[in-house]
Length: 434
Image (cartoon, rainbow, N blue to C red; front, side, top):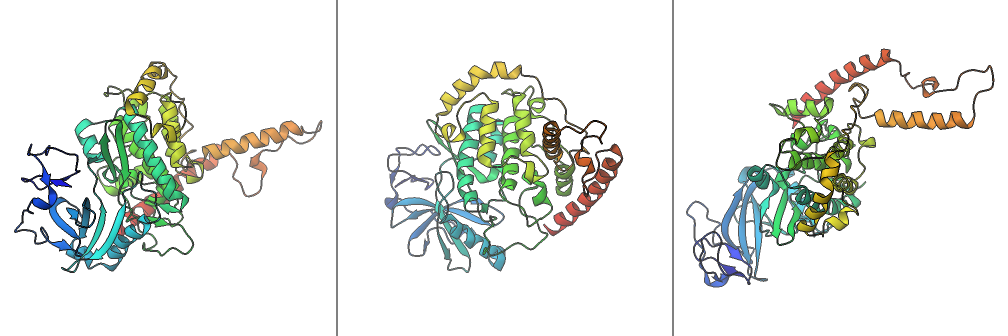
């Protein structure tokens, strides 16, 4: 490893100059650590192995340092809990679980957590690989939106990482641009998913660290079942969140917004987002109408009719931009080649008809319109196969099945209103517990 003699940043052995200071780099072990009177950890050798070099960031949970692994001569990131957080046993258990969960995950697109240790000052440290680049949040703040090729490549890589976690019944629960890290390379970004501390383990013998009725996650990217604090949530909550990230990355706006947390959650539970092709008008990169239905399917209120996996969501987004193949192909393809293929198809896609408006929102209030449509088709097929006898009763519909409501307009509005009242009370209660 090499280090900058001015700022102390660590760099790979093949680096020549520090881009922050323009200084020529020298061997990291020959660069003295700059002490900090405000932070006694700077310069310490943690666990007789990790030399703390400098502060990288401060967050609500803890402080992140850059450190030098004196055994393996590599740069590491070390997150140390703030004193008040370290006194919370549940917070410490979640912190430790991030290390334990990391041992089960593939790390091509998930940050690798290497160690968990107590610190001499009574806190706890999580040791991770050091990533060079920036969070997606910083990129969006600076650039507003991503190019289609960059977004497709990002979603494809994130889908690969998440599918690996979902196969082990691990749900991230806190996907947001702050937890997606972009490592720049000549071929494009390499995405890394951060912070599995809020992970939900759906295995039967998993230890529960969340009280029933509480919510975890950022409200802008929270699925309805997560907003209500339901213990039944599964990997499809991550599908919703990744859809919300895609919407924001391609249009520059979050799909659901409001002045307060409860207001945002109420939007999520009762409203549909504006079509991305409409929101994207006038932006740097046009958004084709073919994307509207893709993201609408990711935002189904009812998880049972939502896009069933993050991989299928990434496939559908790429197809909406005219790409052939799957997200596994696009994750590896250089961004420049993806851009060439998308640019060749985009003019035609922009002329595609805008999908017709759906049925009244009250009929699709819980995302069940698709399920009802499927039942219609099943009964139609059944009736076509066995037509009624002459003079006999009319063909059956699911309106005649005991226990199912009829499709007359009389029951729709009361059910929708009653559901709205119930949803509002659940949202407020869940947010107060959050």
